[in-house]
Image 1 (cartoon, helix red, strand yellow):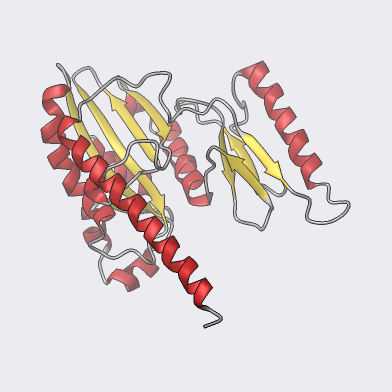
Image 2 (cartoon, one colour):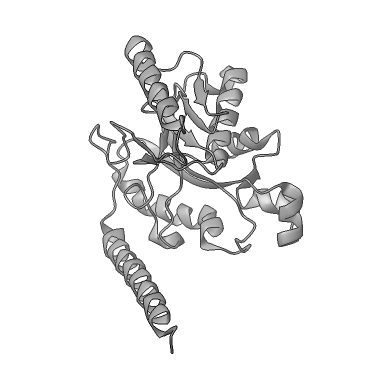
Length: 278
């Protein structure tokens, strides 16, 4: 009986979580028939105008807060002088905290906070290691394959969870990135989610979204104007290919047929782009 209050708190937490998910599911289901393409505006909720760094000293004499403060001041100087980070990235605290600037991203900088026990928070959004690795790999591919994008425009945007672009069809799925590749006649919009997959089942709605999104593509096409719009969904796995093979008992070709690529594969981005641009 002495644990009754703890069990009650747990039950309340579960009910709140369920109610929140149920509300969002019903809200998205109601909105689904009303969906249409719109131009991305400067006031979109995905844009970040300001970051807030918060750190609490772990012990007396801890200089980490001062280090982070100086890091922020240095970033301000770079952004004011160069409107970006000329060297692509700038890190501190053994690169546990990194700011980086992909010139194709729709705002700068992006912030990566790696797992390392720092009592540091970054709001409104920061990237984890897998999310940054994907951008690193995309940048490397673009820089070495300029001819692939000749006559095309490419843009990337970090998609905020819960307030960005989400899909109730995939269990309220909010992919981490939106990638646009625009041509005179066709615009390719891809939703990309780098994530660990060790605990995700082979038939999870987030994975199956690669085929579900094609129904959405057909439904939305009449609102796309004169330009054909092609939608795709990709999962970029931070889990190693060998581990996925054991977990799912599937081959690489079977996995890639569902638009699942691994960050550890040297042709990860190349394979994704090949699927986007036929």
